Image (tube, rainbow over all chains, first blue to last red; front, side, top):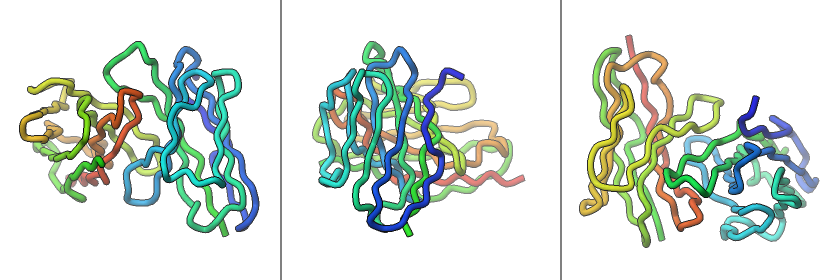
Length: 115
Length: 110
């Protein structure tokens, strides 16, 4: 399977704990995006990487959130001191900057539940 | 700021045609995309309009009018498997990050 993969698929954690999610994009894609989606809403942009450089962060991304893409391949999203409001589906998407059709390929997401 | 508005729900019967509208307000405009998402699944790309007019891909077509800040997705010959949420989305900047509408849930009935 050469699609976008995300791990874990589900994560249940207690409030105050730290969690880390991983995204493996399509290998030849240099653009990587993180989104957050809550029930009944569209995905909300969190952050964007071009290769290993984090070029844009949403105001939604508080100081408790950090993302990395160390070698321009996989990416991690860490949430520190989780809060119940962080419960959501975290989606990763990748695309090729050489295409202009804005087609992003999404992974299956990591569903986070903070208790 | 940027926002996209679409109806929350649409219901139609198998074999029918349905149109899902999207109006947008963006500070810069780089085109309008449509994504489909089944329950529990990932959003999947359906279409993209950079210029005014109609783009057709099989049973699905998408239309854009930049002067009216309006677009729609047209689904023909509806099938039960088309029951899903449909999102219009616009790139917020030239980085390609997407600003999504809140989604339209399509229910196809027999």
